[in-house]
Image 1 (cartoon, rainbow, N blue to C red):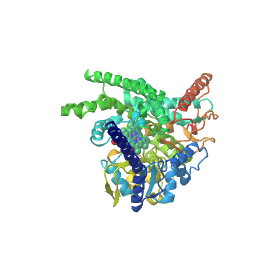
Image 2 (tube, helix red, strand yellow; image 1 turned 60 degrees about the horizontal axis):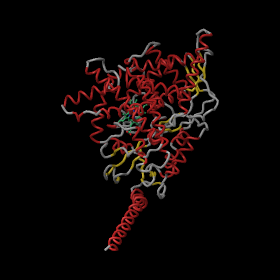
Image 3 (cartoon, rainbow, N blue to C red; image 1 turned 30 degrees about the horizontal axis):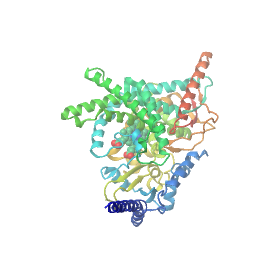
Image 4 (tube, helix red, strand yellow; image 1 turned 135 degrees about the vertical axis):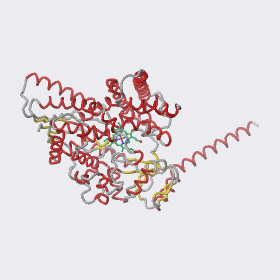
Length: 570
Ligand code: HEM
């Protein structure tokens, strides 16, 4: 009897092993090879599937090369820029054509560059969803950007009112205050020599962090700054975790990093919860008006629940917490990236810098900002659109097919990943004409639809129902910052500037290895008298500037100082 049981157990185990082995063979070889043939037959070409790794080794090597490259890239040569920023994609396009395949391990990802197909993918949000995120990333970023279906619908509806243009008007003083503080520092730096060489990148990053803390948390701004510091720390840990192969469940192991991540998560959530509790109490007591993103989001949440007399129509406190964290991720690096590339391109194209300044001085004079006047800054709009075309902070987006579907005559199987290479499309001469790679803001003189001939070939903020919720916020912030800079300074490249755009989550200027001799800002000042007390202030300010850089040295995302520009008062 015992022998029978033992034999049955042994056979069951052997069968289980065989079934598992067959499943593995299917997952890692049979399915990818079948998909390869299927996709090839539909016109998608790419490297042959290689067991387990696919194209990931080459992708990672080329990405590391781009990151390590410290050679100056010709700012006027679009091909050089594209092959630095999107090395693998650019190569695939040249080798395999516009409909190509990249093997992300054993999963194929097809690139789509046809405007009609892009439109379909970005419109049919239930059929084309976001690919699943690595669990470490999910620990850091969730919220509306990651949701699908009804959950996305509900959150988008509840958050939308906070970004309404009328509500953004009330945030202008917060934008203005943060910009004034940064420019006050620049003015001090310039006051000694009348010029100063400055790496503006860390300053612009600090500015957008300050802005998001003020506009997200209003009166709880100081706590907001601390919370966002912690979130940044958390993202550094998550990026470290992403460097190694993810073993399912490994995030639950009590490793040093996991423990730290858990502790930070707990502290961030507790701190935001305290702010929310305080705010809800104030709202119940009829105190204060809600001009910040948190207050507006809570207001819209309460209204929705009351209107339907149903708690499930609103967000839970934990969900509100996640949305607050998301504002930082989605809104900080992206907007600083837009600002820094604008300063770089206006350093290269001085004629556009002068035109933009002339417009600012005509429309605003040296006065403070007001929303109606800002709406009249047409040249500045054209410049921002063109900067976002040539240097989109988000260089590409991905989607995943939910169920087998036909797209423009192509049969796409469930779980197939789709890549929409924003930057490649923005540089494409077939779509934009022979001057696609040139900086020509005038192409937007009659708006985006005219410039794109109503095709979906320009989407720095995404497109369709999932278009960036913060695009007006970001453009308003950027407008105020640039207008205030232009009112006070002129700028040009420092001789030590190296043009090497690098995709590190967002598209960023080159980082210089640590301990490289530091560059300073050249700001020429017109008629301020020199004063010994002022000199002392300058040295103190310089220390502040140094602190910003050291802070960034700890960060994976924004490691070192990069942009060197001369700033000159007009
Ligand atoms: C220049 C600045 C910005 C750029 C270039 C940018 C770019 C984008 C892009 C490309 C998407 C679409 C992602 C996709 O569909 O896969 C997106 C979505 C999103 N962005 Fe932005 N963004 C910027 C600023 C902001 C700001 C300031 C905020 C908030 C404070 C924000 C919040 C969001 C959110 C919440 C989503 C998800 C929307 C949804 O899925 O419904 N973004 N952004």
